[in-house]
Length: 375
Ligand SMILES: Cc1cc2nc3c(=O)[nH]c(=O)nc-3n(C[C@H](O)[C@H](O)[C@H](O)COP(=O)(O)OP(=O)(O)OC[C@H]3O[C@@H](n4cnc5c(N)ncnc54)[C@H](O)[C@@H]3O)c2cc1C
Image (cartoon, rainbow, N blue to C red; front, side, top):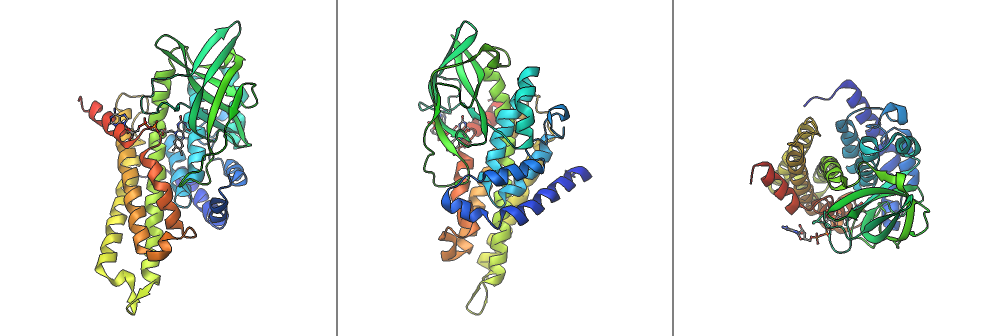
């Protein structure tokens, strides 16, 4: 699939930003497990979080592929930064743009589009995430307000200073799941301390608690009882974006390991002169290409069509598997340095595993693909 001139221009602008502003400093943020708010704001200035949003709310009105190209570039160097934008856009602002009322869009989208604010999305609960329809969190209408009680876990960007709101799923009646916006600072809405994670140190992940949390009834997003269908559609978009992030890691690993194979010498010659290393790199290059090609191909499928869920699942399953394979091989090529946090490949190795788990595990992706085949 060939990119338009506009897409290429945006891709190059993001690549330049990644090389000049993110690459030099991100290792230190990672080491300190510090959320890089300043970098996220600057990516906002570049237009990344608003690229798919309608122009009237501060966006650029471009397509999902353009956003994915940006995520791919960022993930070559740090997938924690990429996922911060991915979660806020595909599960947050895209959902508001698709299902929100005019008032909700005017209230929240301009800040989300500009990168001043972030949106979190709370679906997973302590009792499980894969069975996404089984929601223990409850919202009950009391006069003009929803009263929400429950808990969510592993929520991306739940506790950053930039977070404006969290969209939570809750049962609003028997067999009825809805989505409701909870602005930061609402009494009864609290976040726990950040989890200690093996990777994604630059992304904020926290548990969320809703304890008699009251929000106006107008904070319902979309139709009451349509929450399950809504977030299934958003998750499919999110999976395409996770495939782009995975493709970015896969290529980032090739770039780093190729340079190392040329620079590092053993037995008086570059290690890349050994067929065992050069063949490993050849396989890595081929895998990165297939991950990229597949997600970009799937980006051309109508996201509202019934085929999209299976297609996006395929892109995510393939790309995340490739990211793990390439990160493992890149680490091997780096030898002992590959086990040191200071190297980018070591960070990719720690970060890649979550790609096979988040936004639906790879078992779930296989279920979706099989279902799309009529099984
Ligand atoms: C860093 C991070 C960030 C995250 N961000 C968010 C976020 O922003 N918002 C959010 O809502 N969630 C988020 N999550 C949660 C994530 O989406 C879930 O962890 C994931 O969906 C899996 O759910 P679970 O952890 O409850 O695993 P479980 O549902 O307990 O599954 C455990 C294992 O059983 C397998 N399994 C379950 N059912 C079946 C079945 N029927 N057939 C075969 N295998 C099965 C699963 O594939 C998995 O391997 C995040 C998680 C992490 C780690």
